[in-house]
Length: 414
Image (cartoon, rainbow, N blue to C red):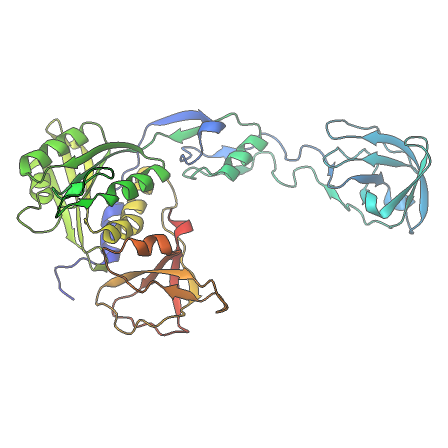
């Protein structure tokens, strides 16, 4: 492998070393905080549940009163969720419903399917056809959360279930880092927007919709500057406009060494460029640097230039730009999980570079083995819509059907 190529690991380390989290925070209502990053940890000020409560519709009893199936007990109270009963007298039962507090004195709840009513609703009797054990069908006070416990750590990306957890302890507002501001533009005179005429030599700009969607799914505030003409002056002007409104500038195309590829010299004129070629496939060219804001580089915006080939840009974003953005957002966890799965394909001629192969879990009777998209070219965007994820294949590593490979589901990345 050429010494001019930077390994995936070194590229990721350099990006993460330069990813300084935003400092500004804001408190948001739970209804607006999905996908945001928690700025400070949350601790509970109460036990959840706050009282012992019933896990079933049934009858609260004392175990000492029901030593055998067929025990007949008077029903002395009826307790619904949201109501608190009185102390259960020895030798009696309480009709109780799911979520209702277990009355003092009761030490088990027998589900209604194991009981028979005998007589009126109250003042009647219940025949208990099951001898319960202590604590049966009772959710204990603090079983889920203890007062003082940390329920969500700083740096957590808030999910619907995390917001539900915050709600369960009565938190109305959560402290979050502000959104990362990302400016996005594209270079290439051949690019046209969907709906416009496709003249000879032109292509539709698919990258705009892929990258904008990826950024918005991460929770970024996106400024889309659209297509920029393939000239040095136009590219420099776009960089200056982008730096004025963003923390990160992301571009697609123009990062190779062609005469009409102006992103690299434009960034060097407006700031600095640190990273250029990567030992990964797809996605060899990557530009990384910084663009000055108002002539001040220290107060400038980070810059990442992705390759223009659709799959190259997609894979490079997921594997390198996504972790960089997550760290800049203040997230504590930015690397995806890899699953060891069985290959149902052969890959006999691997590249010398690290490869990210588009694959999916088999839909047939093959035991869930991974299937490989037949065309792995950097321009075959179909592979990204067909696939479930990426096989992370080490450099020069052939794959034979039955081998265990490292699979990164798109569910971990999108």
